[in-house]
Image 1: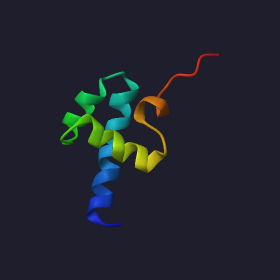
Image 2: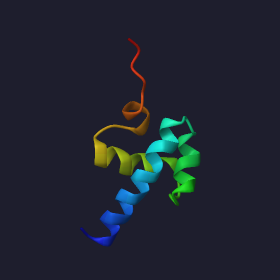
Image 3: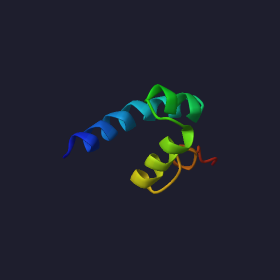
Image 4: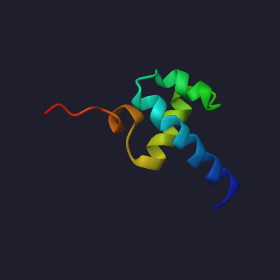
Length: 61
């Protein structure tokens, strides 16, 4: 695993609980050092195949 891949994994591990708690994506992106929410969302979607909002959407039963 390259350094950039490792760093991305660390950032995602840090982002998951923040997003799950309902923090705005703009805040999460800033906290992780991304220049914009869209840059963070693009990386997230590339990794998981869906946007952070979709990934963490709560399904109603």
